[in-house]
Length: 224
Image 1 (cartoon, rainbow, N blue to C red):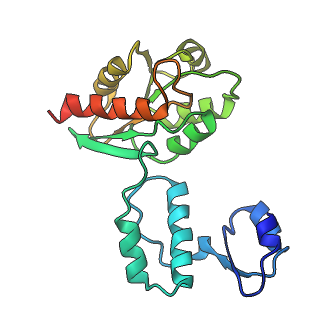
Image 2: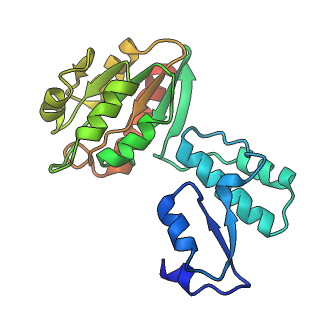
């Protein structure tokens, strides 16, 4: 907020006009306002998720300010492969896409991932280490957006109780078990998503270790 307040008329503020807080902040700056949510055409984003589309729109707006052509902007965004452990596509086997979102170490991050596959049969792998999280909105989103859930880790008992209204919740003792159970529940045209909504320290060194082990298990099962 302070950065935008100290901006000068020669500066640009690239902002999301859909955010009411940002709209309010925009009234405090002398900078030239660029509302990236109004950028047209919408660049082709190969990674799922509304938040990733917004990131692409912001990048496109900055590129246009810098004098880049729409062709150059779209080409750069279309070639972006994403960041490891953040809705990272591992591959597709038997018509099922497998995604690694191990960076989702809290329920709010997990909710972002859950909203990224509208209308898609979704099998979620969740659970891990942590306590004190507010789970209400996450539980609602899980019930609304998933066909099946596979729970693992220290939070599995708690999450099983919270998801009692979900028609298809399964348990896994290990990550390898979770991959096997998820594979049995997934169907062609669907997605298996590791988005734990919890930290990793109960079973893994960190979220990166969790994500890389998940990718290795999936590839070992399908790509061998």
